[in-house]
Image (cartoon, rainbow, N blue to C red; front, side, top):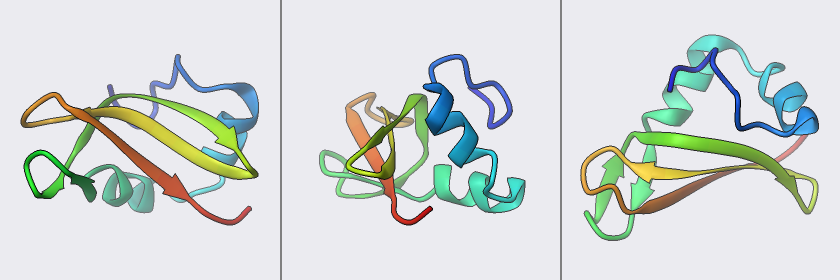
Length: 75
C-alpha cells in the first residue's frame, strides 16, 4: 500500500496524515520497530485511526508479516 493510497484510514486519521509532508511520511513508514524481528522494518497493509488524540498506524511487518504499529504524537 502506497503512501497516497489510504482506503483504511478513518476521515480524521486521513486528515492528520495528509498534514505530514510526503517525504516524512515515507520515512515514518520505513522506520517501524518489529518485536519479532527485533529491528526496524517497513510497515505494510496498514490502517490509520485516531486513538487518544494520536494518529495510530496498525499494520504488518514487511519481513515476517507480524503485527506492528506506529504512534504519531501531536496534532
